[in-house]
Image (cartoon, rainbow, N blue to C red; front, top):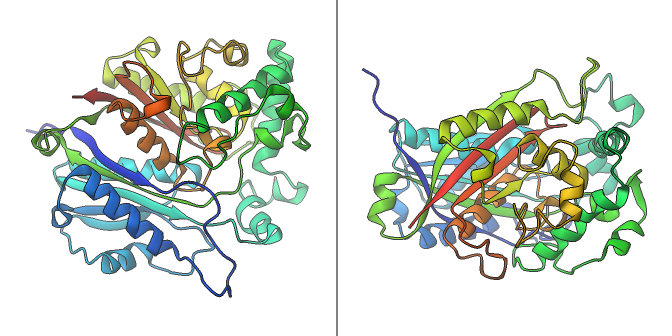
Amino acid sequence: MRAEATQVAIVGAAAVPCGRIQQPHGSATEVLEHEVLAGCVLDAVAAAGVAKDEIDAMVFCHPRVYTQQLYFGTFMANYLRLPMNGVVMEVVGNGMTGGLAFEQAAQLISSGRARLALALGVSFETAISSDEHMNRSIRATGDVAFHAPFGFTPISWYAMDAVRYMHEFGSTRAEIASVAVKNRRHASLNPLAQFRTEVTLDDVLEQRMIVEPLGLYEVPPRSDGAACIVLASEELARSLRKPYARVVGRGFHHEGAHQISEVPSDMINFGAARAAAAQAYSQAGLTPKDIDFAELYAPCTIVEILVSEALGLTPRGRGAAATAAGETSLGGRIPICTSGGLIARGHPPFVTPLYSFVEVLEQLTHSAEGRQVRDATIGMTACELGNYNAALIHILEAVH
């Protein structure tokens, strides 16, 4: 008979503010990734109220190509002096990497392989030259034969999404740009955010175009960051006698496409997110109306709109209008990206989804201070591959 799966909880988390941490190679003083991440681990373990020697496993986000230290996970096990019987490993899945690290750590606990596991990672890229960053991180993310020769980059296909969305539903660029205004307002309340100055709609619309119709404030910055999430069996979580967040639903779907495929499809439908969300809602026994807030992986304003619709949080074709009307703001019907999201909190690639879990834990334990969602009980996270051709969804609930 198959043993019943162990319930999984988040009991602690820590992260550094997104922004510029990395210095160019050859600087008089350099901050290295392992130094920053080690501080996150110590802070997260302290916040969880557990002992370092209780950690059974560490699942790392694979470091960026700019990281000097190879075999980063095992190096960190040595740097932290952490022997363990679970596993020390790295995972990678483009924008989904942090979510996969969380998922693998959760599965180790669910299967009984670990009682306490860390999902953690660090990403530096701000001191890399623009040409190197474009060639190593952006140019070849799509099909190197089909996309790369034409300079087709992620912002390009999101811009195509925006144009198609306006054509299909009659939305305006101002409605789409209202996402940036909302997220900057949320970020102004988040000490982990890279951009903490509020902006007006005119400010957003007046910025230079990156890829039309998306301007500078509607796309993500280059960011450094590091985060550590402490996951535990619910039995262990209860023994700590403090609030925690329990994982109640999860879903994943890959549609068998890479970024934008040559196979015709509805590119603004985000079918993978719809399929993954359906799995998560079913497992949790919940519906979109039960969600109190959501932290979405949304590299551009239009992406937040499209994924909010795919998850059922806003009606199809009405996500932009809902944002402009304040429905997705703090105090609104369904607050989205209370952290400020990728375009305001910051976007350190690979570890970005871990910041979503930091925000969810703070919201569900009612420790988000000025950006607290009132009576938050159920939260949702989403992360993606490419134009949401794959999605990983988690639903968590507060336990007090």
